[in-house]
Image 1 (cartoon, rainbow, N blue to C red):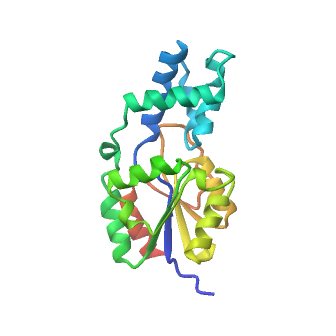
Image 2 (tube, rainbow, N blue to C red):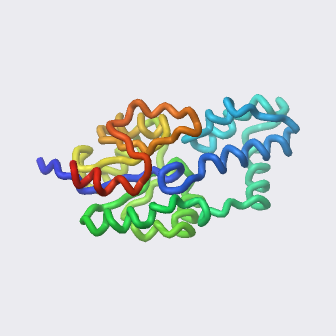
Image 3 (cartoon, rainbow, N blue to C red):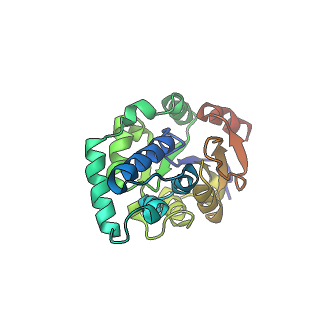
Length: 218
């Protein structure tokens, strides 16, 4: 079997864009406005790397008992429309140069994110990295979300490659576990702001720009 690295699969939030801190602040402010409650930072940390369902679970106890899941998401969508995220401003500065370098090295690139399809597709185009991705898989394109390995197994299937021929770049504990369960080598982009458990990764980088050199050495 050809074991050379042929593709890199990226998570999006926290890897290509610095969005986790923005989402935490946004959810905290929404809860303050909608439920008149303050959510402790420790509780908000539970949403990092999670799907939108994880956002609801993180703050459920701070909303009145009569609030339903559907009511929360509808109100959060309305809030989001009046408080849009400027995604172009939160792209890590080395994201595009790194993707260009990897493409020049002959590597295939893909993205596997827990973000729902509509938002993920909009974000990748606004941020300029959509054209680099051969395959994009989103949270609502699979039955089970991370840490279930389904999204990475599906990505391998669509790439037509084995786990030994790909690496994943992740940041969250959920994403790292999902990739490892899919049999992939995981590079974690270090994140120290959220007390995030990244122990399951195979190796670590401090910034995305370190990735090409790492792959050349591999």
